Image (cartoon, rainbow, N blue to C red; front, side):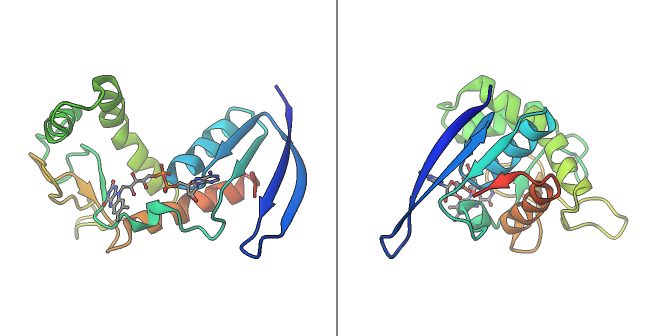
Length: 170
Ligand SMILES: Cc1cc2nc3c(=O)[nH]c(=O)nc-3n(C[C@H](O)[C@H](O)[C@H](O)COP(=O)(O)OP(=O)(O)OC[C@H]3O[C@@H](n4cnc5c(N)ncnc54)[C@H](O)[C@@H]3O)c2cc1C
């Protein structure tokens, strides 16, 4: 369903600008979550409008330096999504929603591989395997990283995909 949006934006100098847009899906927030959601909606045929307060490509995601977790088992083949989920639930004092943790841990390997296919320059071993290291309360080495700039690298790759698809972003 196509709908119209009237956007009133205020700049730092307190001047307002008014613009009219139409879209099927409006995504508010241009961090990793918003960028990836925009790609998914676009690839499913929606006319997407991505709107973010900060247009310079520096959402919180760029502060993530440690890395991204996925039970790929490149260093420790014993790892699995179930052990990842167990570690996550335990470290979260069993406060996290189990179904969301399950979804996250099951889909994390595909998400990391997708980023790699889109050009993310994650660290690799000499034999080509993605390097995974300990980070937080892991039973196995599970964190994939790009130098000290993992979040920035993820945002770079996702913005590139958004641009390639010519997704309308303001
Ligand atoms: C210092 C730090 C280190 C971290 N390290 C790691 C790590 O090593 N590994 C890890 O997995 N996670 C880490 N995290 C957590 C991780 O960065 C976040 O969970 C993740 O980036 C959240 O992504 P997001 O897209 O939901 O939010 P964000 O990246 O914060 O994006 C939100 C976007 O929405 C925009 N926005 C907000 N409000 C509005 C509004 N009203 N209108 C329009 N736009 C709006 C913001 O400008 C921003 O662009 C870290 C977080 C921090 C702060």
